[in-house]
Length: 304
Image (tube, rainbow, N blue to C red; front, side, top):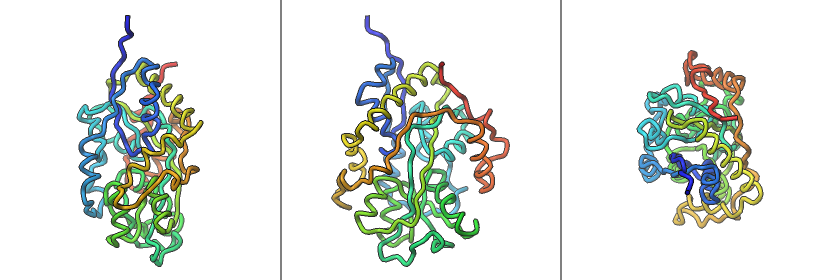
């Protein structure tokens, strides 16, 4: 008798973040763990990618869920994103979503400017608007990258949605600088843009109440197998990143990617000490509430 697989839906994010899910699906690792996993590209994300990207000045004007709001509507049950954004969205949830663990993808974002820009070092960006996606990694990492070089009130950010929109905004001169991840950093270098500063950061996995310890443990084990596969040789999977760059913008190739930027490790528990450090930093920027504590936002839903 065939074993009945447990079904769950996982959100597809930018390829650099979702590569462990993509590899686990392609290699059959989810099925090996007794799971039938559907990778879901939210319709709102499709719309944001296709949009022009109008600038918004205040982060309070943007709801924290962005395209991830599908987890609140039952479109998918698990998704991963930056550490800070996941804490904020878990605070804002109306459906009992919880942080479960750190994600496998260790990501980086860089602030880029045009090649003819007069800006060369982080200090040059004091009071200069940097395009970000509010309540996402580009937003938080920009605050972190620039605040060490200037007063907090001199750090200026403006929301221009997803990375393709921010990148085009820089090229077209609608904004002086933008924070982007791969493949857009390598694309910027290929097109002669300048990288002003760059930093790596963690992400978190969150799940709704339908995902029990057995299901999430299966996902966790599949991700570990995927990380091993990626770190054995990432090159067969690079086309997923390359395909995000429109051909009419640049003939971008896998050989253009700077592979040391692509880092994947085993997902780990999200420790209270890490949470507390991040919570205090976010509180200092007015981005999370004091009573949003580890015991309220985190559920270590891993079977042992």
